[in-house]
Length: 507
Image 1 (cartoon, rainbow, N blue to C red):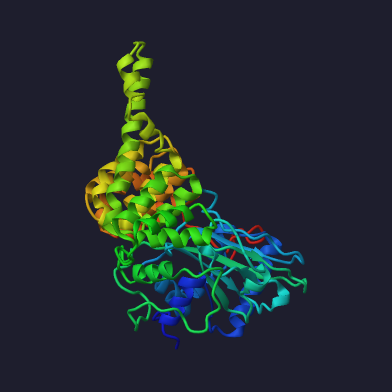
Image 2: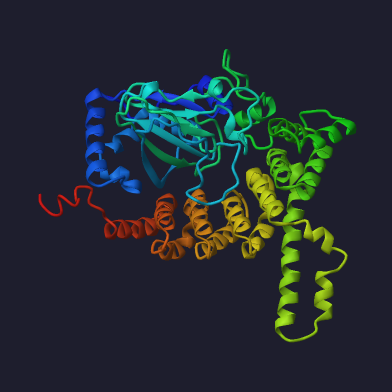
């Protein structure tokens, strides 16, 4: 009998995943299992169409796939032992002889700051033999770290294919560039896509870790560019060490200036510059804060990646950006209130246009959101930022509020304040903020019990993902009250996987 104990990744596999952002693995189900899966998929797709988010309950045997030790071991290794399956699932059917376009998946239609750390991952499962000619998914290794798809070489030479026997699957970093490849055989090809999210930040390695130190895998074909500091930092972050790069590089002021200038250049080199500045002590961090405040959106984002790994030295500058944003919003609100009250309110208007206005004006949406992102990645090192972050929950920008709820779920202090703010986020006008609030609360576990009344309301939300992940959140809170609320919701929402247009009631 097959053991249900997760088959964890090895050090070599984790190093490969850190660098390439993808691994190709295989389950060992008997061929008959996959033949049955494909038969059911053919029937459902022919008679009912794509089941979409109901893929897992509609094809019941698929549950065995996500209990398989190779699958659970891979996900545990990359996302930690209490990872969450996203409510969005999709079965991709490819019968086209034309390749699909290169893309990164959106966060189910919403805008979210992408992360160099593996906070989200996807599994793309192939239930039939998938030779190259049948059009497997193609992946560009290493591109999870880039917003743009910039190649100095040939993309087709760099592309790797998820080709193999039935039961092969690709484990990919959520943000990697990928596409469907041409199906020249014209036979049905299914790829079953499921998304997963981390609910616990690493405290220790969650894979089969033997060697504590980082080194590059031997013989691995390198991605677009060398990113030694980024790869090393990711290894130690996954091992539970936050800010491991701090003060590990000695740089003089001339070198700091040169690195700061590189932040606006070719993206892979700009990222290397950001990580080197993060490792260069206070002067490097100050250069990153300056770039974050004054750069364009791309420079701001790359500077934020550096600050997110720079340790305690980055916190003061990032908190100042959040505090400035709160002050600017308060001044604007006071000035608006005075105008609405029908007074001249010169004092209020002047207050908003005083000498500090130029500094406050720099705190635009992108800058604030990127600063908040970096504070979240610094986790407990940035706990003093909680009051400023909570204040930003009232900001008019959806992007900023979404970044804030994500960051609040990573804080390790002022948790009563955090829970109250996230419970309020469940009533936000933005569906993304509401969804991210439930995910953030999931990370807090039983501490978030006070949010249960807000979660009960969220389970009746108009948005399917808000409803689904409010229920997931109750599972992660795990108290008796949370479980009772969840069971009632699940019983009321019970869905019958047998019922279809051709089989409405019997047997």
